[in-house]
Length: 549
Image: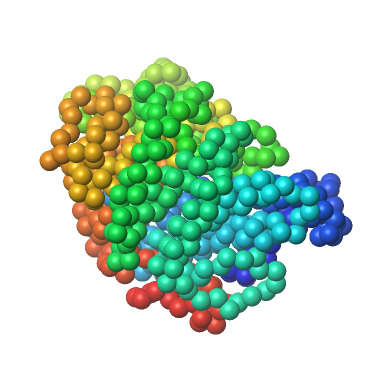
């Protein structure tokens, strides 16, 4: 029986031994188990390895981490079951995560997310506690490293507390089997998150020499988001919205927007002025791990259409599908539409009729998704498949679900992989960028009663997208901000947490998610997820279940 329980992962990430115990395929020729702790911690480089272990733990916490057929990942709890993403099936039947029907504590996505966030926390705790045992370690190196891992611990706790509510607050390394955990109140978890971020902000580098390291602006961005979120709660600080806006302004001043939205995602330009913090992958098989999986998200089974095949350009699709509502948000001149979606799919192979005449030549259009409805006559006049906006979830005789696929995460040329294999994506996974910071600022200013400044930040990202009509203060409301976040950040940040924060999750899911609307099951209890049943069992009930589950 698989053990998805806190104490197992606390042990697994407890020290440098975890680098061999938990990653047995990593440098197997080096027998780390023959080294005792005294030998290991006499080398100051061991601290850098402990810090690197936390960065490694952030990969599954921010991406995909199940190479099996279910492809469980970050997308399950953060995109699925929202207004802009739904399940990739016909609009019938039920689903736990997307439709909120019979969501139960043994759902594997809940257990995987819980496990991976606590793996980050465990690795961070090990680095913090073990740093005192490492000899010949400079105080500057120790201080900066501890700041980096506290930032990542804060990130993990922020996602845990928003997804699950009260959660166990574990702040020290656990060096043996332990099961006496209990849930700390949400307000205490938030206090620890802000304390960790304050500690990190005081010591991490403003501009780290090594790309991908945590910077002060990464901390400012996350703290701004945490304070913005806390500002809606009953235990909010009196100046949470104002401080969130102030922190965001500093980040915005340091990270100018890329001039064109499409260039922001160009592979040759992925490390640009707008990026605040990314999780790195690359092509080195020693350091790549299972690879980035974003290039596989939000795509359907295109390869079964005439002229198509499995492609290292398009790759296979996993995860949810965008909702029709999401596509409807883009204005006529919004350049983010073309930069985000692939409305034309070109043939990979010649498609021949029964007489072996070429019907669709390789390189010609194979599938087209027009922005406006085509008539039946228009569709019949062309050899390729035309799928209208109202047909994305209508069986066309080839697939049940088909839609303009995401292209902004494309990673052309990396190997085509299937279930059970590593994803092998090489591009950086952007976690924070200043386009998102401007949206944090806009929301914070609006909630603080300053719609003029909110409009200024919204106009900045809209203008970059080619929209010339400027917003005025009276135009700004939460719905507008949510719609702009969708167009700007879809697939990059947690949509579920955004809707929960703004108290719009239930209304928007029932209005815009076609599968969830069909089942009409989401209620107030779904504003937190059920605690994984394995955690309740191992603590013999000390960890109590959320109400209604």
